[in-house]
Length: 127
Image 1 (cartoon, rainbow, N blue to C red):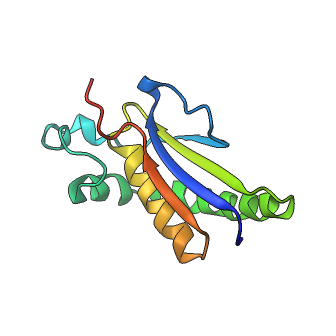
Image 2 (image 1 turned 90 degrees about the horizontal axis):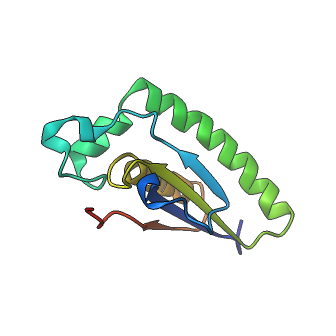
């Protein structure tokens, strides 16, 4: 996997799909912290939001299936010499779910030895 640069990107569909993404994964089906008044002004970097999103049965199942897919795809992309890969995770505004999932997947990829960087395109937006 050396040589392939993996970018993990969070974004909000409200602001458009990133044009440079190789894989776009919609996480709007996950529990939405925005629906909880006390978490509405928080974001996916806050511990309460992370716990709200990550520790549900649907998220655990999703992450397991996603990691199986990503491990397979990363090997295939490496085999054909792909040098850069952007995996984008989108939720409604890019504040909560996509940030949590992007952060978590970045951590998991690094544990498996994949070189990755993380970017949160819409995290600072509030419009």
